[in-house]
Every structure is written in structure tokens, then in C-alpha cells.
Image (cartoon, rainbow, N blue to C red):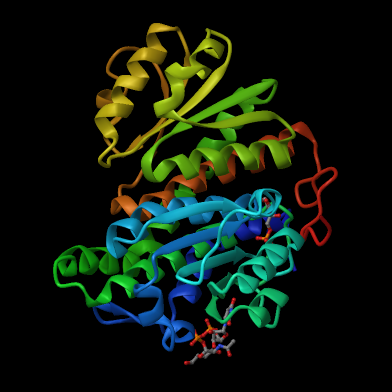
Length: 365
Ligand code: UD1
Ligand code: F6R
């Protein structure tokens, strides 16, 4: 049921304070994280030689958002695989690997075929899914249900943020035996407790995002630049814009800007730059300066109060978001972009919940 909302996508975006609360329920105990579904295997995961994240679409992007924190806390190399590409290449997977399969539905054909492949190769296979009793949940050795509640809109929104939070909790659980990172872990756990409140706050940007959507309604294309944790936000924001608003959009790694994409920038093309506070902030400031020098039509996403600092060289529109711990910032930053793609779709008169040519669960290759 849609309740007071016009569309499921809208409802699911606004539901995120609650869905994130349910995702974390029973899993945060004081200053530690306990994932019941991994308790028999966590030692094996800690001793694996490599962790491989495998998924498609939004689920892949969620894993990409969690990757830097998992690398930091585990010290284990974490590699990324789009399920179909792993299968196309028949890439190497070993017994010493932990393969983590991320899938909202738990029924995506490519992800399930990649799971069969990893099982044949002897890896420990971990599932992260929203669907109890799905094929993924049944066939993996162990895993974590994200408990985000049923997601009906074809465009994934609340499952994305819940998946990120589960993978952040996975990193905290894996790193739980290390004294050297205790302080860092405790800070993030405090941040997790507070996250639903901050999500409630960032949802207040709804009207501002509707206004921004009005100004972008007739655009043919939109670029989104991010880096570090927020490379995933750039990819996921652009995916939402293309799949529901049917507008061409590319999520780009800001570090790659000068290696090609900069050629596209002129005074007509809108460009979103994600420049919230984290270890990449000063690099993003210089990206913004360079885009200004090319007369780019900038929309800068920055931390509250940072507009003049982020955009010191000239006029730009801004999206100011509350600042949270670096590894949790992706959960906050995607929300204005979800709202933007929702409003763009409604304004352009397209079907929000059933985008053209797409299915909720891709059960064929
Ligand atoms: C479980 C219960 C939950 C209960 C809690 C109390 C279920 C589905 N969950 O939650 O209702 O409140 O204990 O302690 O009954 N699994 C996989 N692959 C996956 C996902 C999960 O193998 O992709 C397995 C897990 O390893 C675990 C089981 O499914 O054995 C349940 O996982 P999860 O719901 O995440 O576990 P808990 O959070 O402990
Ligand atoms: C985008 C979207 C898709 C899915 C992808 C994987 O909004 O929903 O990109 O994320 O088809 O689906 P799951 O997570 O069910 O494996």
C-alpha cells in the first residue's frame, strides 16, 4: 500500500529512517556489532586471502560504497565484480576467498550463476539479501538479511542504503578483534545509532530537490562526479536518473576527469560534484575549480555550511547535506539524488514505479 504517497518509490525513499532502524535492530550491542548470520564463519572470513564483492546494478554500487571501510578495517584486499563480467571472463576464484553476493531480490540470474561458479571453485560464499528464503539465501553458506522490508518500486532506494549499512556492519564485525581500530569502530557505531535521525533531516531537502528537478527538466544529460566513498554515490545517482527519469546520466570518478570526461564540460551541460567533507575534500575543491575554469554548470553537493569553501571560485548551485562519519556519508548523500530522480520522473511524466523496459527482478541472463 502506498499510504499517503503517490508512488512506491517516493514512499520507499521517505521510509529510510525506519528501514535503516530495522536493518540495525538486534545487531548493535553497546559498542559492538553482532551479525547472527555470520557467527559460525566470521573467523574463516577474517582469515581469507581476499574478499570479492559480487552483484549487479544498485547492489554492486552498494558494495562499492562499503569497500573502502571494509579494506580499512579488515586489511584484506577487497575486489569488485559485476556478476555477468566475472562469468564472461571466468575470472579466478579460490578456496581462500570469501565471495560476498549482494542482491536485494536474491533471485538475479547473473548473481546466482556467479554464486554457482564460486561454490564450484570452493570459496566461502556469503549472501546479503532482502529476501528470506530466496535462492541466494538458500544457496550461500551463510549471510545477512538486510531486513529493509518489501521494496516494490523497480528502482532500488531503501534496499541500497540498508545494504550499505549491512556491509559497514560486516566490516565492523570482521574488524572486531583488532585493538588498533577500537576507537574508530566505536565512533562509527555511535554514528550508526544516530543515522536514522540524520536521514530524517536530509529528507527535508525534498522541496529543494523538486525545485532543482524543475530547473533540470529539459536537460538531455547530467554528469555526476564523485571519488573515494562517494564514487559509489556518483554511479548510483546517475543510475537512478537514467533508469527512472529516462535521462542520460553518467557517474564518473573525479580522479579520471582529466583523462577524458573534461572534454564534455561546457556552459550547457549540468554537472553534479559530490564534495562533502572527507579525506578527498581538498581534491574535490580543485576539481570544482577546474570545472569552473571550463565554465561548467555546477551543482555542488557539500556539507552544511561549506558552500563558500567548496565553491570558492565562482557561482554554483548547491545541495547542502548534514555531515556524518566518512564511511556513513554515502547513505546520506544518495538521498537527495534519489529525490531528484523521483521528481525529474514525475515532472517529465514517466512511470515512476515501472520504468520502461525494466523488471524488478532480472531472472534471465
Ligand atoms: C535471525 C532471525 C530473526 C531473529 C534473530 C534472533 C531469520 C530469517 N532471522 O536473524 O528473525 O529475530 O535471528 O536472533 O530467521 N543466511 C544465508 N544467506 C543469506 C542470508 C542469510 O545463509 O544470504 C543465513 C544466515 O547465515 C543465518 C540465517 O540465514 O543462518 C538468518 O540470517 P539473518 O536473518 O541475517 O540472521 P539474524 O540477524 O541472526
Ligand atoms: C536499480 C536496480 C537494479 C538492481 C539489479 C540487481 O535501481 O534496482 O540495478 O539493483 O537488477 O538486483 P538485485 O539486487 O535484486 O540482485
